[in-house]
Amino acid sequence: MDIDEIIKKFQIDLDIDEIIDYVKKNYDKDKLIWDKIVVYIDLKNKGKRISLSKSQDFIFIEKKNSNEHGSLVYVLTENQPILVSDLEKIVKLSKSLRVDVYLSIVDKYGDITYYNVDETKLTKG
Image (cartoon, rainbow, N blue to C red; front, side, top):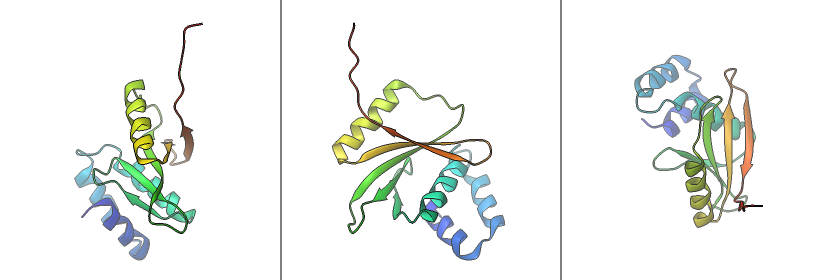
């Protein structure tokens, strides 16, 4: 069962024990599994049409009135460092897909802050 399946089941059955079992079983493979579920549910509750990337590293927000990806969301937890090179890869991916990119930061209380990320060029001054 993947995140999509477990969340669909969660929204229908509200069986928290099944969700917790899923997180426990998959936590070693993906330390951000709970944060991804929280962001996924938050976006769904905001009326967004979303899907997960095949690697489950990203959440895609679909464009209105279209099945095309409109935005890419990368999930992080507070205090989790991210390398500039990783941000650069994410921005390059979003440019190749022609989508906006957002970082979602989940704090220890489950509150989410979304940051729009864009490319900038730094020069010596």
